[in-house]
Length: 309
Image (cartoon, rainbow, N blue to C red; front, side):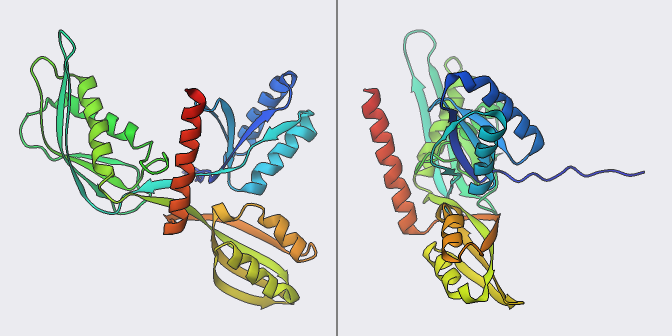
């Protein structure tokens, strides 16, 4: 007997907003995206309800550019694409306690839920959020723990720094309180959300950036130019060899700094240089990069609030 293991499909590392220039092309546009998704499991399509944009995601800048070009060439639909968005993540670096009470009284039955415990880092910064109940006794009705977990995991989708998902954290409940009349599933879900917000601010949150493994090949005379290109993009060169007159450079580079690299490489090596890129891991972003991302997010948020007011 033979059994086949399921194929590992890596998560996308880059996103791009895309839309047809004319509404008359909507049907063909949709057909193209559906077909490409069936052909390529690493190509994803979604819709952002907040920005009302169609978002395509894939494994790199060139990957998405090829599909935008194919929509135009094979379906005759001109598209407008926005700046690619990198899938950053957020995580925590230390344990933080929480004691959160959600209490609301507005005539009749109110809302009451109190949760006590701590938020701590897990073994890996990319672990999905985890939930543990270490409470002794039935101070909180057991059926409400699922509501606390749901609230915590929903809130973990929006980090405190740049609103990216929070990974590598575990919420542990050690105590709490409920009310015979006012406690409910909704009350404890809201308490779970509030407890996470309270703790994550004190858990030294950080931003994680996707880092790529890059292999660059070019004629030997362009070795210095290639090293300079990698260094300019905050890359770390791990290995460099010359094989049959070709220099092969292996490096790790943050994905956010790789946009436009193929154009720079071609122009710097007379069109003879080429490279491949593969997702490696999410790693903590340098302090300066983190500060820039937080500042940009705050400015974007302020602009949206001003537009909506």
